[in-house]
Structures are given as structure tokens and as C-alpha cells.
Length: 182
Image: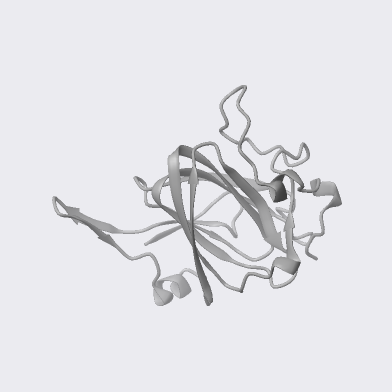
């Protein structure tokens, strides 16, 4: 596995080694020692799997208590995946990074606790799987608007198209009004 810091150094792009032939392929998606050797000493407690169709945008989500670190990847389709640093004490506070995750590139993204997370489905559909370092706690879940002007995220949404949002995501708050981490 190759562990590549993004422009937000705590968010790590992970490129697994893929072995394949005419029959298919094999790759490791989690190896505790390799992650520890890369400085990521994490413990996962929950795995999630979602399926979304083209044009769906989910996020920007985070938990203000019981913050979750997430190891995310796409097993079918493609998404533009975004992490936003919500840690006031961080040099990258308020900055975002976005990467394409797809079944073709097989990349994964490590998003540490203290970040908001979201994705836009750019393919016909996407099956999105992720490991979490803490349990889902709906009472602590928060949502920041995906189109917040202060964050100015460059989502790859076609001109004159509107993403499909859940009620929760439509009700997201502005970054300036969000509960943040120290």
C-alpha cells in the first residue's frame, strides 16, 4: 500500500497494491501493521455500505461528540469525495480536499476525526463502503451545507444541474454557524 498525504496532510490517499489477471483481482483494503507503519494507529468499530445513484450528494457530515475517523472507498461506480478540516487548532482549519474514488482506481481515503465528510456520485451509481473509528451517534451528528460559500468546494457538478439532497443535507448549517472542534 502506498500512503500519500493530500494537501491536507492528515487526510491520506491510500493506493492499494492490486494483483490481477484474466480471472479478476485481489487487494488488501485493511492491514493493521501497514497502517501503523504509515503512522495511522487506528481501531475500527463499525463498517458501513451505501448505494447511491448519479447526482446524489451526501454531506458534509460529522459528529461533534464521538467523532469518527473514516477509511472510505468505492467498490462500484465513482464519487468525488471531500474532507473539510473542522479543527480550530489545525493549520488547515476550514480547508477542504477532494479526490475521485472509483471502482477503477481502487483508491481509499483516510479521513481522521475532526473532519466533515461528503461525496458526490459522478457515475451512474456508487457503492460506497467505509470503516469508522467510533459508533454512529445520531444525537451528535451535524451537517454543514455542501455549497457553503466560505468553504467554496469545487464539486464536479455539471453546469445547470442541482445535486439530489436528503432533507438532512438541505437543512445543513453554514460553516460560520457550525459547531466546531477545538
